[in-house]
Length: 178
Image 1 (spheres, helix red, strand yellow):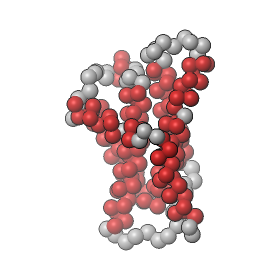
Image 2 (cartoon, rainbow, N blue to C red):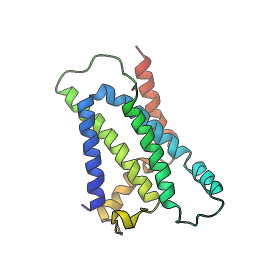
Image 3 (cartoon, rainbow, N blue to C red):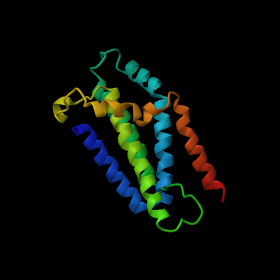
Image 4 (cartoon, one colour):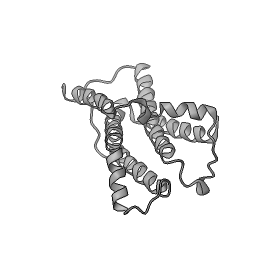
């Protein structure tokens, strides 16, 4: 396993541990925000890039602004995720399940959030050709494992970003069912 996989697995594990500490009921509220952020950024990605290219007045060549584009997309995603964790989260009503099921569900939802967060950041790094190579020491090519993993990063899972909103709708229905 190469360095980039290790970094993103570490991020995913840290978020999983946060999910374990918070519990699946609170973590599902953050999942809703993460999925909504993923939907918004993937659905409007081409429009956002087109607007950014209009704003720069054609100053950016094909790759000269990749660092800026990465910072904008990853920054927007990070702000939305932070809001999902720091603000009020959606509360799924009902009573928590008994142990050991609660522990397993805490881990599962935390791992899902870890995958969504670290995978989306990795997606934007890959999408914008790993900018800031001189600062990070990134060296291409990726390992064969990393190249295989790219197809499983969250924004790459679905051709149509609308599929990301389906779990959001299900979570909203679960939260209002009373």
